[in-house]
Image (cartoon, rainbow, N blue to C red; front, side):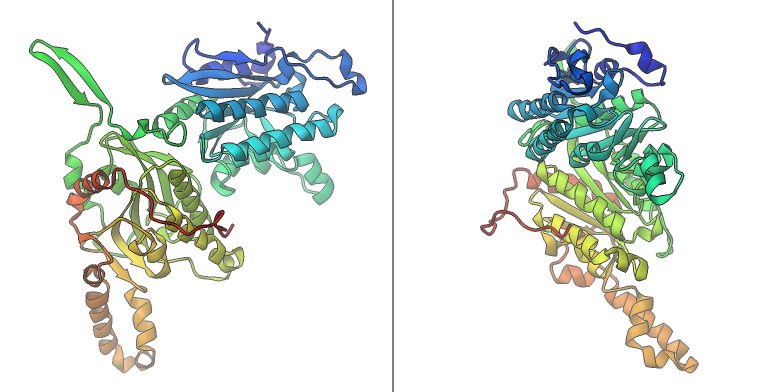
Length: 511
């Protein structure tokens, strides 16, 4: 049994690697492997250095009763630096996790490559990256950044499905503050360069930001209750039941709960004025099981909302525009956020529930120069490629190319529902009349005519009627019917098989 320098880590305000593993895993479930591994480096006096378990603890345990693979770098041992054997241990753990079909969770806390080992250390990183890619879409990969993670080391978390960060503890960057100062003559702190808030709010690298380490490990455990543990895992899509013994025999009850008051509450969510914003989470929480919505990337690109939820106890992926932030418009960051989430859900056969209230793609030179065409195309690609059950609810606006992009029937949605106030059109009435009656608008005397035409356009084109007549939406429903429709739709779509696809190696998503 290894001896751990726990107090040295506590002095930095952090948990030790073994404490982190124990906080993640069920009590007494962790079994360490490769504990006896040691480096073979003889450069710079390394042959005299004893580095227990080569600075990383690896093994298997259970979370919520289900097996997981876990590794945690130990910063108290040679700064958690990665050498060849250290890298081999992690790579072999991921490879074994693929074979035994279980998620892999990595706790990153390392000073980076072990300089004394030179190119052998780089070899260790390469082995990990290769296994990260092999595991993608086969088993979920979760990265916890619980200390420094710099240089090439950041690309392993970058290749995984979910990255968790912790305030004042997580630091991720390609080049650290010292190099930035040397090259760019810029003084910047670890926190401002690559802290938890930077990657949760600005870069979009992190999926979750936590206040404390223990909160982080609880969130990881919660996430694993929503997602499949391997490709083909059916457990998240089965309603859990509890059997209670009583005087008059056993009684089986479903564990999911839904507040029937939400059926009335959803009718009051939309503002009377169509230009006013509202929080789309109010709609989501009126449709999914009570308190089941578990948001992903909550602080990044808040004009889009992504996450997981339960509907009658079964996991679904949620994608929604959020009119309460930037009007719900699609920009580069929101497009990336949506496309990534859709592709993760499709990887693991998680059905998609989409809520649409989008006025279009953002206009202007800033987003055009940033590449809104390329980023927006990712959404189109992700939805078109996804073969999972896809249900879309249009709550209000669905304009132009953004209407098509947000899982319309044209991109393969199985069922599309629209609320009575839905506005499905090329653009809003203001913009449309501005183009159609540009000449008339030049003369102030035509103000009444223009106002009349605007009202006509709104009544004729900005309703779900035409889309329903063209068979583009499955039904116009009242908001109070939404949950019942969604439940029934997913019941019908259960066991859906993929459509025939053309023969190819793989597509070329516009990255």
